[in-house]
Length: 450
Image (tube, one colour):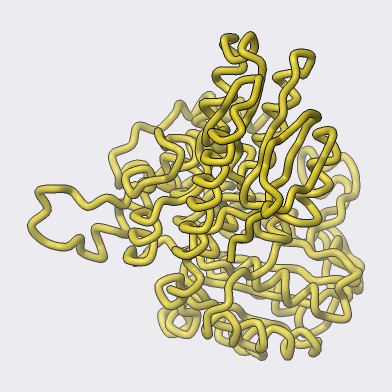
């Protein structure tokens, strides 16, 4: 529940009645320390003529959660830089000398708005530990998965993780490693579908000097670099059949041969594999080795899709809002109640990856102080006569993810494919499927060589 307390940053009189709890911070540095120790719903900025606008702007961009009210000299209020700061970050402002009654009204209104947001479950306080790579959420499905991870982590056998694309399989693998006796060793992730077929054997197993043109020196492979830790083979269903035999030998004997090498190298690394396709069905189709499947499928984990984690949707959205806070427009403070409702009602066919992309886009594109459904791309068309079919939603989410990755990668196919977790050829097929104009292959080739 929101209490009648306020953080007052700066020097000078504040004119608040005795029934307010005032936390005084003479400088911005003191204000940061207070907010880290105890978040406040309302803040008061006492600005003087000599204060630097850039310092206050950085402070408010970092601490966007409170409802800020500023008091500043009339001369500063007339300057464009300070006016932008007030418009972007403050709920209200006043000029010196203080009108104590008007200030109390403004702060009371800010406190009431903060209490209203608390009551709707839309608190803007940053999520503690938001930067940590871990499975976030308190739903029954994710709680059950975390319990299974702790049990699986204590063993040394291979782990096979299944989950839809974008559901968080790598985070589950990281948690297995983090809870295991090998947690002090390296965690080496490999996307089997993103490495070119002609390079994957050398990347996984390494090579000896002179093994092929360009092999000027010995090179350790990724499996060897995981010595004493865990190796995560994501999308293992994309591994070519000839390399599946080599991987099977490693699982059985704990030794590898580098490309062009004649001596075996012992490697002590736990294998954690993941796939979004049903490997049992792939075995029946002849696309995956049966003996490798049974060697991997000793300890199995299923990562639930986001549509089965409805209770986690808003906490996850707030988590990503804070994680990518440096990307948001300064005026954007959080999610509106309509946006929260739209998040709850969406099926999320692209899972957590889709949620991340939509939140990041909304943080940049939102025109008001609160994110609306249209900013998330979740506003239903006004002329829609029937609900969006699941296949249509998947296609739209896939296209949105491709557009966002190409934008972040500067139209570099190699970087965009790596961001999406697919091979370059797969990305070219997806571009053709959605009618997206592909960047020049020549420019992409130059980007790889650089």
